Each structure stands twice: as structure tokens, then as C-alpha cells.
Length: 221
Ligand code: B1M
View 1 (tube, helix red, strand yellow):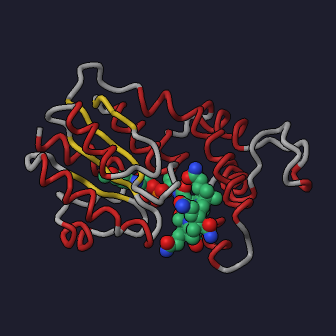
View 2 (view 1 turned 180 degrees about the vertical axis):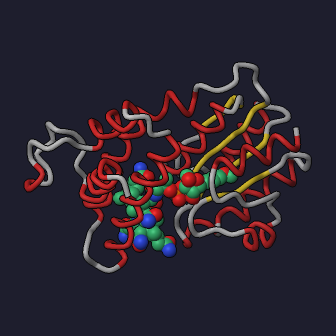
């Protein structure tokens, strides 16, 4: 792996936000996710490469450490902050897509779930691909989805979940949307999901990443 991307992955894993950040102490005075992402773009790495070959790798490592009992919630939080500092630089690239709008996409992380990094990336990529995105944030109830589907006739819906305990909430939300607005397409995504799960809850499809989602949406509009 390229040395710069390697270093950036370490910044995400260890929660090194920027040079000014005193945490972690052994990385004091070193560049953080902020500076290294900027440098990677300047050196010509694409936003997709930076995301997939550095940021996601760092996030996976901290998640694996947490699972193994070698890291704790504050560690995941500080990694998320470092990730957000990196995403500030990638956002304009992901969002600088078509100007003519293809339609409206309502997106949210489902009830009980506070993970929003993946959902935010999906929002940025969809915006860049020419969609008007209505982002409902995190911990979104069926009622809030319904209100926004009603307010955006003809929209499509995306639900995100990162927890096995919250992905189950998608079934009720999907059912509520389909009962009131049967024509509305509802898509799901998030690390613990699968196409099988999407089929089980009666959703219109599972997408492991935003690029596959946008490509598919282009085939159905
Ligand atoms: Co949490 N957490 N966390 N966490 N966290 C995970 C998800 C976990 C796998 C860690 C682990 O144990 N290895 C684990 C879940 C285990 C499980 O359910 N099987 C876990 C846990 C247990 C928890 C808590 C329960 C911990 C606790 O309190 N005991 C707690 C729950 C809080 C809650 O939500 N109610 C919790 C809290 C947190 C923080 C707040 C500290 C923080 C979130 C900060 C934030 O999001 N603002 C956090 C973090 C950072 C993680 C990890 C480390 C990273 C998640 C992430 O951002 N990934 C994560 C471990 C891991 O994933 N390796 C973990 C990067 C992101 C870009 O990927 O979200 O998958 P992802 O999005 C991708 C795709 O999935 C897809 O596109 C994105 C870009 O490619 N996608 C979609 C996502 N949504 C889509 C929607 C679509 C289409 C595609 O629409 C149709």
C-alpha cells in the first residue's frame, strides 16, 4: 500500500484528527487525517481511492479492535471524528456532480441507530450523481420517514443501519411506507445487511456501497 494512504489509515484507526490535536500522545505534532487527506488529493489520489484504501481500512481496524475488546467507545468516537475531518476534503468531490436533478431521495439511519458516517457518504455520492437528497439524520422513526415521503411525492427512500439490533427496525418502517405509499421504492444498506435480508423484509434492494446504488437508480428512472 502507498505510504501516504497507509499513514492516513493509521490516523483514522488511532483517532489523529489533525496536527494541532494532542491525541494520541505518541502522534503529537504529526499530521493528522485532515492534513493527510488534503495531501493525498493534491498528490492525485482519487476520492474513491482515499475512501476505500485508507479511511475505510482505518475504520475497519478500530471496529475489529473494539470487537476484540482492545478498544472502547471513546476510541471509536475519536476515529469517527478523524474520519469526519477527512470527509470535509472529499465532500466537494463527491458532491460536484450533475446539476440537473434526477429526483428526490430521502435517506436516514433507522430508529435506535446513531451511526451516520456511511449514510453521510451515501448522501454525498447521491448528491454528486444528481439527486436531491433529503437527509433525515439518525435514529429516524417510521413516522418521520412517512412525513418526508408525503412531503416529497415520487421520492425514493434509503435506510441505513450498522447494528444487528437496529436493522430489524427496517422491516416495520418499510411496511409502514409501503402501506401508505405502495409505489415508493425503499432501498437498504449498511455493513450487517444483505440482499437476503432485504428480500425478507420486502424492501426493493440492498446495496453494499453508494456507487452500486447510484448505478442501479440510473437504470430505473
Ligand atoms: Co459502533 N458498532 N457502536 N460506533 N461502530 C460498529 C458498527 C460495530 C460493528 C463495532 C464492532 O463491534 N466491530 C458494532 C456493531 C455490532 C453488531 O451490531 N453486530 C458497533 C457497536 C456494538 C456499537 C455500540 C452498540 C457500542 C456500545 O454502545 N456498546 C454503539 C451503538 C450506538 C447506537 O447506534 N445506538 C456504537 C457507537 C458507535 C460510535 C457512536 C462510537 C461511532 C459512530 C459515530 C458516527 O457514526 N457518527 C461508532 C463507530 C465509528 C463504529 C465503527 C468502528 C465504524 C462504523 C463506520 O463509520 N464505518 C463500526 C465498526 C466497523 O464498521 N468496522 C462500529 C465506515 C462507514 C463508511 O461504513 O457505515 O458500513 P458503513 O457505510 C458504508 C456501507 O455500509 C454503505 O455505504 C457506506 C460507504 O461505503 N451503506 C449504505 C451504509 N448505509 C447505506 C445505505 C444505503 C446504501 C449503502 O442506502 C440504501
